[in-house]
Amino acid sequence: MPDVTDQRTKPSRSLVGRDPWTTPLDEIDLAHPGIWQANEFLPYLARLRRDAPVHYCADSPLGPYWSVMKYKDIMTMEAAPHIYSSEPTIGIVDVIPEFTLPMFIAMDPPKHEEQRKTVQGVVAPANLKNLEGLIRQRVIAILDKLPKDEPFNWVDLVSRDLTTQMLATLFDFPFEDRHKLTYWSDVATAIPGAGLIDSYEEGFEILKECLAYFSRLWQERAGREPGSDLISMLAHGEATRNMPPREFLGNLILLIVGGNDTTRNSISGGVLALNENPQEYQKLRDNPALIPSMVSEIIRWQTPLAYMRRTAKVDTELGGKTIRAGDKVLMWYASANRDADAIDNPDEFIIDRPRARQHLSFGFGIHRCMGNRLAEMQLRILWEEISQRFDKVEVVGEPTRIYSSFVKGYTDLPVIIRSSAVKGQ
Amino acid sequence: MTRITYIEHNGTEHVIDANNGESVMEAAINNLVPGIDADCGGACSCGTCHVFVDEAWVQAVGEPGEFEEPMLDINPERSANSRLSCQIDISDELDGLVVRLPEFQF
Image (cartoon, rainbow over all chains, first blue to last red; front, side, top):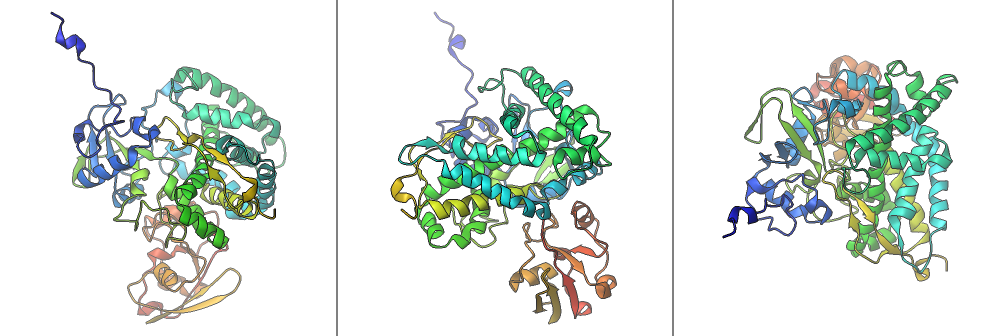
């Protein structure tokens, strides 16, 4: 007689295909990438907002962790870095010191501010004004090369390349090598086994090449007059010029990653959102002055980074629960941005909604995304130029989403631009 | 009602009659004064309601608070008379207040 226990398989932690409203709360591991790639995550976020707005997952392959689902509770956390620390990491994976890169996103005051202040000038709006012309040139060059009447992958031809060019500009990185920036960024955020790297060890070896390349650029820039690119700022800034190599690499990776797949996925997300909401696409056509507000709405709708992690420094209370010192706590921006207690009609994509800028995709508090105006500017210029050229960028197939509960984005978005949609024909 | 003057970076003036108890930020938003974004809605968490308090009013308005200071600290345009306008509550003592708006919010 076969042993029944041999035939019992451990239930998959993936929630894909299960009922979000009846799955027991203690079986919900929101950080498992399954439902995120399958685009089944929204009802789980709603379920937890309703039934467990501060939810404890006791048993996960990445250790136990809290999920905070409500806008107001996340705001409480963002305003309290002395309670909810960003050290040692802001991702769910507990860091292995040998493979950890120090970066200011994962630092607390006062070191955080000392380092952030050194580099934020490069993305300050005053500096962005100087970059607007160049960005527009690049957008036009990409849009004017797009094929007509044949399907193509928007992610590859537009989202990825545009973002990479932007990063290369910020770093004054050799333009012909700019693909390395995207590659290193993708390696830095990859889950081993999902197609890019097989292990964190492999990832770290690849990032050593990144360090070597940037170290060479650092040497060059340190020997010159201070410039307005990121490397020059780090090489000359008082708080950063004596930075140990691992910290230099860490902050570089931070700035590459910060401006890489987030912007890329918002560029893709906007096309998808407009196609899924044709009445909003018509609003855009009728009134391109809505672009700035639409950009904020796209960023809210997409929420390119689903969460950020904090670690409690002391025992504390949140949403009626007791969080212990040392506990891992995830702020689910992807949930807060759909919280009806904070945002009206949150599941609707409304390009002229009031208070469109009040969303959590950039976070809030001292760690609020310093590239937020740069991201918005790229999207604004892109949509200004699209609006002048094409009546419609038409999605013609299902998007393929990334296997990640952290990075919310797309590897494939099949689109077509029909010659009938080209303006001035 | 308390009179507040907001001066945009380009010199345009907006003179508003505000309610006591509102913040300087809320009065601006409610009266459609451009140049204050208030992305976090007044939670002292975004820095996008940054204003420069006119010299004559710095004392009456007071110093930045404990949680306001770090947000101002990471603003590259921060000056000695910078405040986050969501943290300035309007009262009779501020009747006639003048604030200048930065060219950009960050």
